[in-house]
Figure 1 (cartoon, chains in turn cyan, purple):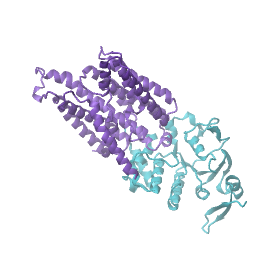
Figure 2 (cartoon, rainbow over the protein chains, first blue to last red):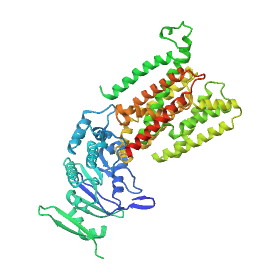
Figure 3 (cartoon, rainbow over the protein chains, first blue to last red):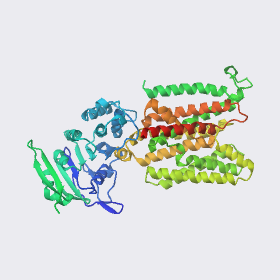
Figure 4 (cartoon, each protein chain N blue to C red):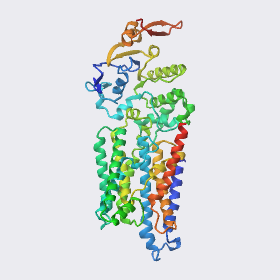
Length: 249
Length: 323
C-alpha cells in the first residue's frame, strides 16, 4: 500500500512479474501505474508491504545493486546538459562503474545498446540536434547500456511517430530474448496487445485483472475500467486491434 | 591526447607563466635576476608576493571548482557557489570579529569567518533535513544568504566607530593584499579537503544530467551527493572568504569559459574550472597590483566588474537560445 498526499495511490497490490516476458501495465489516468513502476524501481517505498527482486527484499539490496538489476526509463526524461549521444548512452553504465574510468565491457555494452536502438550513427551529435524520435531512442539506449535484468519504461512511446513506436516495441521485445523482463506503462491498448505477453490492468490503485492480453482486455472490462465501449477485431494478417468509442448514454 | 587533457595542460602552463608574472609585478617590478636570497628585494617576493600568489591559486581554484559543482548539481548554468549562503555566513562571521575589534591576532578573523561558514552549513543541513530535495536546498540557501546579508548590513550601520565601518566595508570588497603564509596554511588544508570532496562528485553529477528520478534509478544516493556538495562547497567557499573576503563571479564565470573546450559533461568541467579559476584570480590579482592607482583596487571589485558584463552576456545568449 502507498499513500501520497492523503490519497491511497496503491492499495493491496500483490503480483509477480515473470522474467523473459513483456508485461504491460494499463489503466486510466491516476490508476497508479507510474507509482507502481516507481515502487518497483526503488524510487518510492510502500507504506505497507514489500517488493521482492528475485526473491530478495528490495530493501536488502544496495542502491547500486538494485540499479544493476533494474533499469528505469522515466516518463518524459529530461536531459539537462547538452551532451553528445555517446556520452549520454554511456551514463547507463553508471551502476557498473569501475573506480577508474570506463572498462572494455562498458564500451562494448554501450556499442550494443546503440546498435540495438539504431543510434550509432548519431554518436557524436549533441542531444539538442536530435528529433523527438531520435532522442527517445537514445534515452532507451541509455537504459539498455546498463544491461538490466528488468527494464521498466514509463510511456516509452509518447511523442513517437507510428514507425518509431513499432520500432521501439520491437526493440523492447528483443530485450526479453536475453531473458530480461520488461515492464511497460502504456496508454494505447493496441500497443499492449501487440507487444505484451501479459497485461496488468489497474484502476484506483488496485489490480483489476492480470493475464494474457486476450483474457484481460475484454470489451466488458474495458468498459468497466475506462468507461468506453470497444470493438476487438483482427486484421487480415492476424494482428489484433481494439477500437474504442464513447459509450452510448 | 583528448581535449580535456590538452586544456588542462594548457591551463597549467598558463598558470606557471602567470606565477612568474605575479612574483615580478607590483608597485615595484622585481626582475628574475633579483630572485636570490641576498637581494634586498627578496623579502618582498618571499614574504608578500609568494603567499599572495599561492593564495590566489588556491582561492581561485576552490571558487572555480565550487562553481562547476554547484552548476552541475543544480543543473543550472547561472548557479554560483554563493547561492546557498555559506559565503554570506562566513562574511558575517568576519564582520562580527571586525565589529568587536577582534583583530589583535591574525587567526581571529579567519576563525570567526570559518565559524560563520560552519554555522550556516549546519543550519542549512537542519533546514533541508533528509529530504535531499534540490528545491528545498536552494530556497534554504537563498533564505540564509539573505538573513546573513541583512545582519551584515546591520553590523555596518551600528558599527561602534567610523574606523570599524571602514574596516568592514573594505574587507567585504575582497582582496589578497597583505596576506601572509599564515593565511596560506590556514586555507590550504580546508581547500584541499573541500576540493577533494567535490572531485568525488564528478560521475554522480554526470548521472544527474538525466534528472533526479533517472539518476536515483541508476543508483545515485541523493543525500550522499548533497552532503558532498554542501560540505565541499562550504569548505572551499568558507576558507576562501575567511582568507580573501568575498570575491564573487569566479565560480559563475569559469565553468562557462571551459565548456566550449571540454563539453558540457559536469565531471569534465570540474578540473579545468579549478585551473581556470586559479588562472583568472591570479591574473586579476596581477592586474590590480600593477594598476597605477593611489590605493590598490580591491580584487573583489575587479572580479565584479568582469562578472557583471559576463552575466549579462550569458543572459543575452540564453535569451537568443530561447527565441
